[in-house]
Image (cartoon, rainbow over the protein chains, first blue to last red):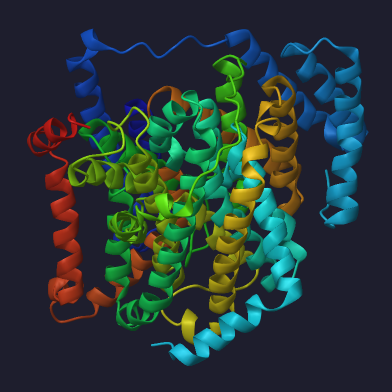
Length: 135
Length: 503
């Protein structure tokens, strides 16, 4: 976080210097971001110091099921990428089928209805019922 | 100040309108399920509603959202009591006594207490809103740009809450939110700012995809990462519970309601803080509870639910009169107003009195439906909240995609939603709260604009410092900010935390 704040401050200062329009620094678009970046660096330093002080007393944060997380994230990104190419209904059915299967549902009589009926219901509800445009 | 007679007639005429009541009812039913099912949240539902109600009439949108808000905050108590998993952050404290009561076979009693005192709290908060909105607007109309800037800053400083560490992290999250709000074309000069050469970012970061990502998709990732074990649901044996026994707590609940309404009105604070404070106060106030607190004391549920529901009305005060959200949900509701072309602020009650009445009428009707649904339907929800997460979570992810796309109709917004979802997940894992990002997103560009206007005005004054900080309101706000900082200094917090360890 601290490194990110420092990088942002540097970016803002460089951009301020390169602005073609001659304007007082206080009125430039990067004045407020520079102040924020400075505050972020200060807070980041505080957090870093506090983290170093208590590093021996870290409370366990619980395990992360990394494969599940990465797969669901990857499937979601792939879903977003597929939407403009194959449309909402097929993309959603495929996404639901793969995600629900990966998360542990193996019963076909639940897997198939959830994957194929849910997109249809969502389409009816949002597109036809509520008039919401779908991807 | 709003003429009471006009307000009363305006609100009652809306409440008597069948169409308006129907929309509140639909929102209330949605809020009941959304709040009760862990994995769904009022914030997420409200964020989705911004997109869904985009093409609706403003009154219909207000009615639905108020129904979702009022009943959704209450229904977090249902899963808190039945499966020890709060359906909403503000119901965390309810688990302390609600679940032990359910384990003793008193789930119906616990739900009855939660329903009735959520109703009491909601009505109290809305009455406070009705009475105070006018006077607050009258004061706010005299605010200068620097006052608005400092008020927003004060609001962001109250988000950290309870410990030095969480205060620092809360501020950091708020700064992150402000940064995101500054992305786009800079005001006045119109030059791209913080876009890093990404063309679609010139339009800025739209609020809705960010909110849906932070509250919807991030929740999906959190639950997936933490394992898909479903909670064990307590059964609800039928019980006769005399109303007189429940109403015995009414006088004490008013104290919790007052705490909730006050905390709700503080920009940046919210239901979790209110219910925590009210619970602590109840522990100090009640000499002989029905059982020890934390082991199934109904007084604990009364305090928590009264406070977190009174927060609703309190949080709407700064949102409507100052355009500064009181909590994450009101930050999202502010987006609804913006999308419908409304501008909350000091003149809102004068120029848009009808919409103010809609908020009140929707809230009061929501309270009535809360009572109805809470007493009749909530005890039967145990089967619904058993929906396995492995089926629920992918559906929530799809709803998040729909919500992100619906307003702007850009697939880029869906990508933004995924980004904010991943960001929200990572921040939570590292102990950074997510709600301050919402507030920063909503308040950031307003703070930037007010800051520049304040500097611009001061630069033309004879005494720039006096022009910036010489007014009483400005000095009071500065003092409040400094006091908040001092209270969160390590030495000051240690004393407070020692006290809190009794809790």
